[in-house]
Every structure is written in structure tokens, then in C-alpha cells.
Image (cartoon, rainbow, N blue to C red; front, side, top):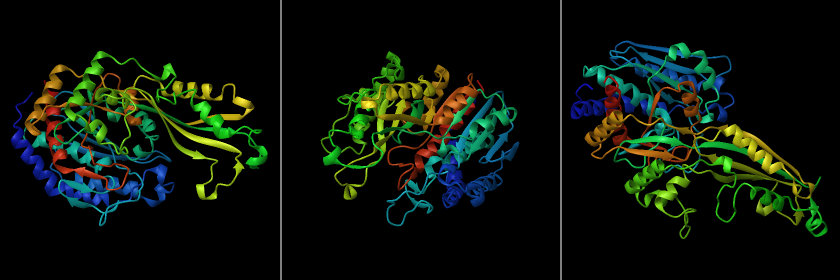
Length: 470
């Protein structure tokens, strides 16, 4: 690897973020570019296109050599931006980020709002700041830093989509359509992940997948006075509760379908121990549990594994139940429950969905009309093992920039495009990182970007890309 003067590059990175990247990112926050799932009129409104135009305008201010930009719009699909930078060394790197945003949500602090960029160091507030508007800026600056310091770099391709917050349902079509343009990357870099704290470089090595759907239990054609029908027509809620117990132990929360679990290796247990040693009790106390509530699985490492490498079921919504103020003494016609099952990497989501449907619909109690209608199926992600030399470079960069060693990270959430990218590029290595850490609050009120950590991640990424020349 070419010699890296971390202090020099980091000073340059600081200057670039302050002088033009952060001002441009602030203007990006002002664009209400809702993902298509939240804005059915996205094409007419034009906000997704506006984010791409804005980012391309920023690219035009950079002294990047060998750069070309192209915007792609397949019929009926959200736009995609491709940026290519000619390499000065062997190899290819594909960078991924997205520009679409979650809905505004409520509860923003006074003086703040989703489309109002507010800087209160160390934070930049606003929707899309950390999820994932900063990602394109960070990735581009990591290559420009190498150019400006005469350090060779591989060919760099930036894939920036506008459908991620809707599950990236448009991305597979573009991966096929733009296959020649995207090349054959040796490394895929994703800047849409999290961090356990802001004191080191965190590298995400796994994310869970997701199976979602609606369980519906119907028992009658119309609501009936509970004094007349109670105990005669079976309760739809009781049946729904018993059906859920087929797939989840109501005492422990353990998912009962063995097909939805994977073996947890000693290596994974060791990595969980490492995360626990760094974060300590924060793996539990950073969650907003009520006083006195205890974790489902005690022990810090077990908490980490249960939130990342074990399946878990959440009931996220219900229908067929009136609000409390409207509830009378009526035996209801049906109960519908929205089920969200997180599955570990290695479990095929479509198979898991079919297993759930089969178990839930089989032998309905009392002849109730039972159905499970799936509406989401996304595979998890497990990164290929890092080559020791590359891990050493990441560790060195984290020590030089943050003052602490690099740490691997597990994520319990789902990023569907990662499985798509891994399927498309099965021989590529993956570097999944980011600066979304505690308090970042993506998707919620007061979403915010930690500015110092973002600058440090930029420097670390530059070092990682330079290391590919070895």
C-alpha cells in the first residue's frame, strides 16, 4: 500500500467537508424526496430527480480527474445515478448509497424539522442527513482524497439509487440493465450501515433478513353481542393468539421453527464477545426499555446474538379491533395481526415465509377462516471473511484516525439491497460501514449525522481503498 499520511489526509478531509460537502448536504436535506412507497406521485413531484440533479451539481464543482456521470431512468422506475472515475491502479470498487428518504414523522425538537438543516455540533439535523444522504459525499471524497495526494486508486463506480427506503424494489432491474457499466468489482463498499459508538471504525459483517405478512382469523359475518355469542362463536383473538404460539414460545420469545434458525459458531460468539467488551451495558441500556423491564435473553453477548443472529417475531399492528373508546360488548368478526419475523443470515426468506404460512394455516381451530398473506421477504447478509491484511489496514486506519481499533458490528435490521448485491457479485469482498450510531435516529424525529465521525470514516475509507493496490 502507498504510504498514507493520515494527519495530512484527514486535514484535507476536514476542509472538504466544512467548505462544500456539508453545505451541499444541508441543501439536500431541504428536498422532501420521499421514497416511492411513501409518495405514489414521486414521478410528477420530481423530488427524487431533484436530489440527483443536486448531487450531480456538487460533483461538477470537484477537481476529480477521469470522472463521468450518467442518469438512468427505466420506464416506471425511480432514477439511478452512475458515477465512474477512471482508475490509476488495478482493480474495481463499486460504491453504493441512496438519496430517497423516509417520511417526515412527528416529534421533532423545537426549531428542527425534517426539511430544515440545523447544525448543532457535533450534529447535522435533518431527514436524509445520516440515512443516507452523506454516503455519496463520503464515498466520492474518499477517492478524491487519494487523487489529491497522488496515491493510486482502482477504478471507482458509484451506484446511487432512489428506492432504498422502499426496499430497493427497482434495484434488480438496474443491476441487470447496467451490468456492463457496473463492471466486476473486487470490492463493494456500502455506506448505509451503523456504528456502535463514535469512537472507532465499525464494520458491519451481518444483517438479518425479514419475512412479513398479515395473519387473519375470521369467525363471523357480523359483530354479535358478546353476551349472546360469547362462549359459542369462538373468539378470533384467542385463535390468533394460539396460532402465533405455533411459531413463537410465548414464555421465552424463542422462535419455534428450526428452519428459521442457524447454528451460531464459536467465531460468531467470539465476535459478539468483542462487541460486548467495547459497548458494555450500552447494548441494553441504549434501548428505551421501561424501568424494570429485563432483556429477553440475559448476558451482554447473548443480547447481541439474539438481536442479530437469532430469529425474532414482532406483532407490529392489528386490525379488526376498534379503539378503546369505541369498543363495546361485541364479539368481533375477525382479528388480523401484522407479523414481522426477523431471520438470521443464511435463512432463505421465501422458504421461511412459506414455512410460516403452512404452520399458521394448518388445521385451523374450530374451523376458523385463517390466512397468512405475505407482503415482505428479504434475505439477510453475511460478509465474506476479511483477508487479514485488509483487516489490519482498517485497524491501522481506525487507530490513526479515531484513536481506537476497528470493531466488527452485527445489525439486527434488514437492508434488502445487500443480499441483492451479494447475489449479483458473489466473488466480491464487501466493506459495509457508516456513521449511523447512537442518537442518529434514522426514520424518526431529530434524525442527525455525527459530523466528526463522518469525517474520520472518510479518511479510513481512503486508506482502505488505497490498500487494494497491494
